[in-house]
Amino acid sequence: MKLIVGLGNPGSKYTGTRHNIGFDVIDELAERFQAPLTEAKHKGVYAVVRKGMEKAILLKPLTYMNLSGESIGEVMRYYNIDVEDLLVIYDDLDLPVGKIRLRQKGSAGGHNGIKSTIAHIGTQEFNRIRIGIDRPKAPMKVPDYVLGRFTAEEQESMKSVISICADAVEAWIEQPFLEVMNKFNQ
Image (tube, rainbow, N blue to C red):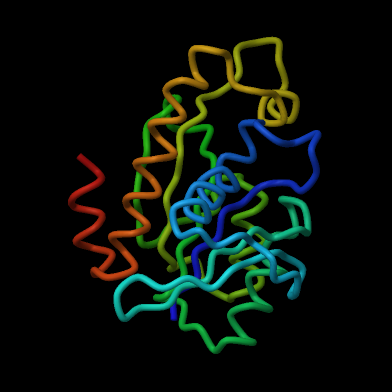
């Protein structure tokens, strides 16, 4: 079984913010699989889906971004999921808006949701999809920026990015992550 996690903050006031792009990808996948996130356990909401012979969990932690690892760790322990079967999707200030980067490991890069994940699973060697949101222009501060919404122009391009990320996740459910990386990191 694989675990696919989108990072974000719960609540309508955070819907559509840059920091919630991971939640947006999970919502797209839930729609594709016609699997609403109705299970509310392990400090998150999730659904179990099937693709071919494979099963996967789509998870949105409800702990708020900075404590995301609590939910991820609980689900991994409960379902006995190996770290190589984990994929975390999140926003990245160091990539241009709309750019995606798939990686098999890496540091938190200042991202508190990833710091929490590393702390709760005990390694930084896990699959991830980073979605570029760019850095704020001065004098805007990072917290205000990540909790802000995309511009109308950015929203249009992000629809396509969310779809591409969902395509990558669907491919990974049945293929090795390295193959998916090679295809989607072009």
